[in-house]
Image (cartoon, rainbow, N blue to C red; front, top):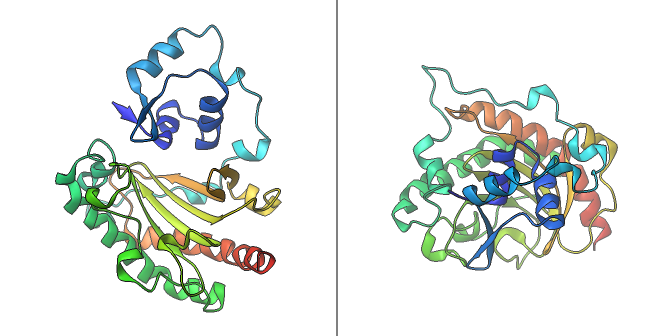
Amino acid sequence: MVMTLPELASYLRITEAIAARLVDETDMPRVSIAGKVRFQQPAVDSWLAGLRADPLAVIEQPPPTELRPGPASDALPPAGPDAQPWVTAEALAALAHGATEASQNMARLTLRDALLSLNDGVLTKLTQASRGRLRLHPEEAHRTSPWRLEDSSDGVIDAIRLAWGEGPGAPSGFADRARLVVELSACHLTVALEGPGGGPVNEDAESADRGYALVSRPSGWALSKSVELPSPAPTLARVVAFVSRELDHLAPRWASYALRSV
């Protein structure tokens, strides 16, 4: 099994931020596929078996806020036996072992449609929280990240993203400016405030209490939080309620950062 960083974190039962530091600061085996770092489960297992100490002891422990769990209310319950899951397990598999298969394009299309239905559900809250400033990309093709393998720059689609931003002339995903993002992977749903450049120096205490971590990336920074997707997936109503609550928290922070970066 070949794993992405989020899948590695899930496999090791640690946060994605800790997994990233473990990769950066140790000799954990990894491979490069089309310029993307991936992890082979047998190689990771062998590496772990050969260690004489807890691998987390190899790296400097991060600030407590990176390990602080979110509130229990963040847990997304699975859909009941008589309820319709927001997404199916078969479709989510198109972001896991099917992430490099063009035959899974239609399954990924259903996930894109699920994200757009989520947008419809949170639109009122987002409009209120951002005072009408945040919206989807005006061009239909750029309202989510690619779902067709042929449109992927690296031959892998292991997540699909929906972004809200502001202003004319925006590239796909509002990549050149501050934005709010929801990302769907095979195992997690992530909500984030992202931006280019250096970003905030520290996450605020309230965000840390809610389980957010501030991370640096080659393309910028992100104040993000991920929750695990149960099986079966939760209902759309449950996902809308969770994402609406998080957008209400992130929208004022987006407005503050956008103002400072003008």
